[in-house]
Amino acid sequence: SKTQIQFNGKLREIAKDVPNNFLLVHQSYLINSDFVVKYSYEKIKMYNNDELNISRPYRKKVREQIMHHEWENIK
Image 1 (cartoon, helix red, strand yellow):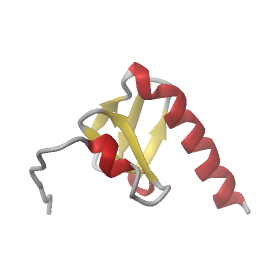
Image 2 (cartoon, rainbow, N blue to C red; image 1 turned 90 degrees about the horizontal axis):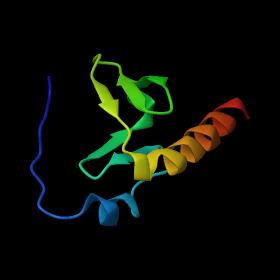
Image 3 (cartoon, rainbow, N blue to C red; image 1 turned 45 degrees about the horizontal axis):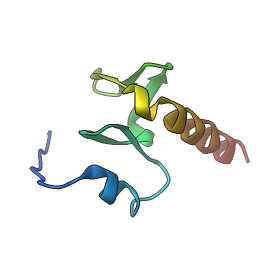
């Protein structure tokens, strides 16, 4: 089942305090990378088949986080 939570505030502030497997891909989307099935430079596809665009200001940081997360999973 899908749970939705309404939040009034800035996700950028919340993103500072969440575990490293969470990615801020847009000012409105903070996602858990454990539920991602496919990455590209501009989009992320989730297990539920939702596709989310990665906003331009977040692309470099998201790519760095993905590479770091993948590296940690290899160890």
